[in-house]
Image (cartoon, rainbow, N blue to C red; front, side, top):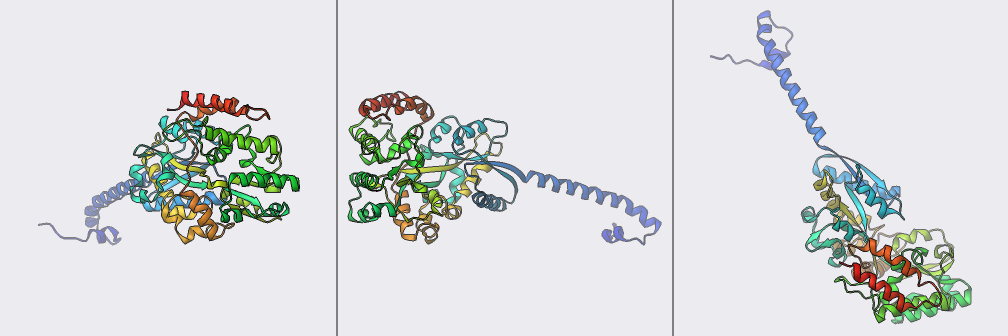
Length: 437
């Protein structure tokens, strides 16, 4: 018969007889051994639950990084693990090349921002993990299908756009008034905000004020970012560089007309800030520019009145950036889940103040319409939200990087006064047809 005994009481008691001590000593050793094992198991679990993740980003803004960091913290809490994360901010102008090198290094990021011009090449190179399973819990049907189309291959989703910012026109109200012109939104209301009206306004401003009418996107487009600069003009006349099903259209009559239109503004009207000139819209050196709402902060301290409106002809032109997970990461599955969480509706609503999302539930919300410090709710609804859902990104392909290299010297030929636009675009079209796949 085994005697029942309160072993814990015996072990903890200091008033033990020699006999009891002899009986208890082995039990004390056993308990200590068990406690040691439990502590080791607990320590091992803590180590296993601590995961290091690196996230490559374009932004270096501390406020924006803090917001993104809070998403990672929330995700970690949701998973019940500890995530030791770092953000790696890469240089803006060289972001794509730096990211590509980073992904091939020994310390590659587990998740990363990816630009629209890179996604097809990155998918083809096997750098982006599939996100289908990770997105299941975050209502993928809420993401606008048009905005998501660039970031998928067939049924597989490889990145989720967190910024789907349409290009809008930002303009100097004072210069329009000084030139005796209507406010651009008056032309919009009348239904007369056409490309021809836009050109006449730019020409009039230059003639009457001496200030350039139009500054290209980011004051670029002649030596770099040529496609970005020309896209609104090409699409505005019914053309395109190439379609989603790879039909080349840059040498179509419509595309030629769009490029010729812009060329004439530069060389005949002289109403566009020319190549090499540092006149900048944001410092009063031009009457308008095409850009995204993230640039409105540059107007914080200006002394003149400004406004925003849709592009002439209500043209479709969207700038996107997305988040993806590194398929070669040892934590690829966790990184994919993190990307899905960071682009969920709750997170998208909070980044909307910087980057317009493409989730219907967010775009329709009052929080989104009141999220921007520079635009009122009506502007966010009628200019920004409506454009997100009716715009598409620039033409893109798996061979876009090599196409860009081959066509750069050809685009350079456009920027002379007597350039043969149709002939040059024909040469560019030949490069497209030889490389698109």
